[in-house]
Amino acid sequence: MATQTITSTISTKKKRKWNLYMWGALFVLPEIIVFLLFLWIPIIKGVLYSFQEVDFVKGNVFVGLQNYIDITSSSDFYTAIKNTLYYMGLCVVIGFWVPAAVAIAVSELRRFQGLARVAGYLPSVIPAIVLYGMWVWFYDPIGPINAFLMGIGLPAIDFFTKGMSMISIVIMETWQNFGGAVLIYLASIVGIPRDLYEAAEIDGASVWQRIKFITLPNLRSLLFLMFLLQIINTSQSFQAQLAMTAGGPDNATLTYMLLMNRNAFTYLDFGKATAMGTMMFAVMMVLSFFYLKVQNRSEKG
Image 1 (cartoon, rainbow, N blue to C red):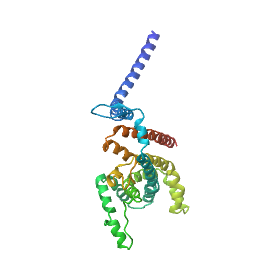
Image 2 (cartoon, rainbow, N blue to C red):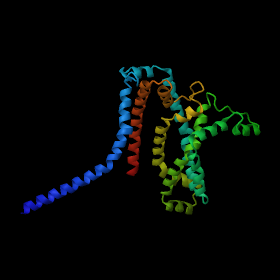
Image 3 (cartoon, rainbow, N blue to C red):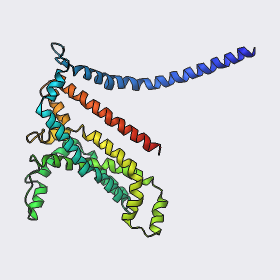
Image 4 (cartoon, one colour):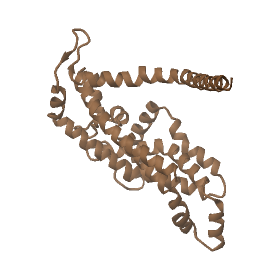
């Protein structure tokens, strides 16, 4: 009798556990289906296409590594890599520190913090096509920036020369995107114990000393995470380059993703485009691995 009771109890527990897993699986199933349909199946098909000459009318032909050989034999491929690395470097030098500096400055305000946050985030809600048109006007030889420069006796600047075009795009994107990062930094700064700041003020610490010895040390992990995230995001940039300069002048703003876009939608060479996408996917996997590793370490404290 006791044995039957124990067996029945174990069976009931197993049934409850199975029901729990079943309901959990049912809740996760829609997400799995979405990921399969819109992420993993396209990725797998893209990898397969990279070994084929893609023709949606006559059918695909397997060509092995020929797409990779053709891509890596092109001078545009290395120009695009060089430009992408240059763009990523400019984004770090020009744009990476702006949101952190603005967030720290806003956190030190005694009044109007809410207004400053809203003002900082507003550029992020402007539609991209409107933003690009607005900045093309700003950069115009007779636009407001050059009008101001000439008004104070300085020469006008041609913002879309070979040497200036990428810098001009980075300045525009920094203005567009820094607001979201500012909110992330501010959320982290709010989490710093206020007792530290109050004690520093009592000891006579200046604003710079509070930033140097309290704010920045507490933001160190977040700064590194945001740095990795920016590297990942900027390595995939092409929209601004396509809209504002179409990769010119003389391929000065031709990025890796823009070249891949050209192969796919201008030359209709989807085999080469997917070969480039596969190579980029491998690089992104490595960068994402480091990002997740650093994030997990940061969360564990």
